[in-house]
Image 1 (cartoon, one colour):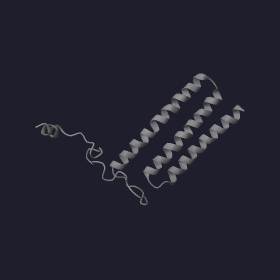
Image 2 (cartoon, rainbow, N blue to C red):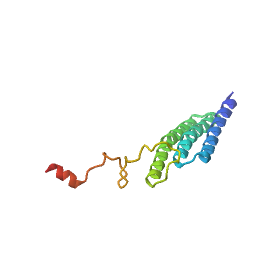
Image 3 (cartoon, rainbow, N blue to C red):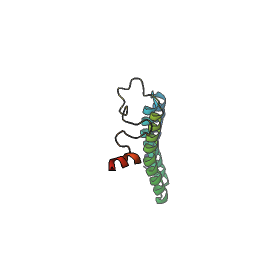
Length: 130
């Protein structure tokens, strides 16, 4: 029974990683590629590590696997967000069939901050006090 669980988890994990690889090749722009790989690879890695935890069956391995899964679930979306943000700021275009750009006109191209949420300069703060 344990071998069946290990095989099922490993097969599902490998399938998700394979789907992420196919999606990476098939998607037309960087933003869609990031979305595909972040979601599918994170789930695939989690399932593969879960199969390793079941295979070894010790508490020390299981705790390490849980720590690794937590780390991957925490860092993968953050890294993908940062890659997408940098890609947008350096001007990598959206796919030509994208319907709309949610960020267009909302960011200051110099400071890379949302418009309306920028911290006023010291001169602006002093002039408000006078």
